[in-house]
Length: 312
Image (cartoon, rainbow, N blue to C red; front, side):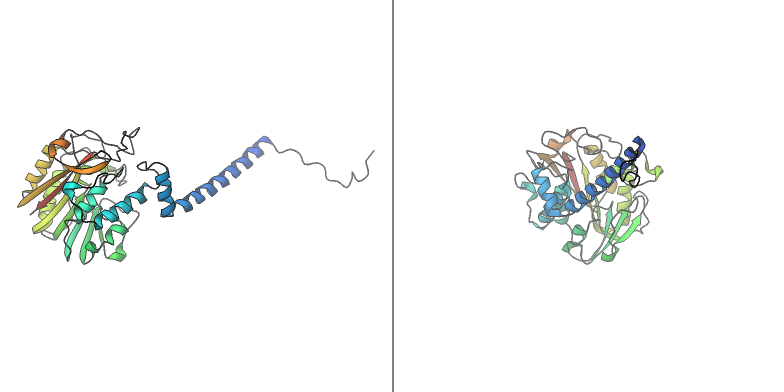
């Protein structure tokens, strides 16, 4: 016997199969994941929010907001009249060696027109290339492969090549910048910089070929600015640490009219200039790609660096 209206009603919907439930759950999770990533990206694209998060999170190097924190510090440092012999207490707190390299370099660059080679793409950032010292210069950037950012609109010329064999004519440049680059020459550059498998090498002495090239393409009286991680000679496969003998070999190979070397060390929560002997035994390096944990003082990368100025 049919109850009243039973014939008009649709039969009850059967419960979905287990596989259907799994598919629906997966779709919901995927949508939720996309929404979460989008919100996250929008929030952290705001520099103020990103910096606030970094500060509240304990200023952990390489955590979200670190690059904003570092950029703002560098911009301020470049414009400051720093005394490198006596940097302020806590200078560059929990920032890698860029806290020293950029202001050290900019304090020595000429203000006027010149042909400048950035060997290794150290300057290839909008906030760096927008600095007043970069104006009225003909800038070439030589690096292994194209990067995500390029600034042709600023008149920058990009050359993708091996620094051991450059394409430039003799005596072309007034200034060559090679900061945090020489330590990668002849090692495994496929980890971060290029997909060319031929650049997966272990030729630790070929950095001297770059030094010879620099002298060839530099004008008489021109200058080369070099920075490298410093301490005991250690090979991390994608970069190596320079020791005193390697610095000496670079200076001798260049064989210029003058050379000056400054050493900096990160200790007591800040960067300071130090004697060579204070950095000679350094073995501390934090590699964000391979290190399993931070040092107690949250060292961001190199414990010590050497900053070298060579004049032809």
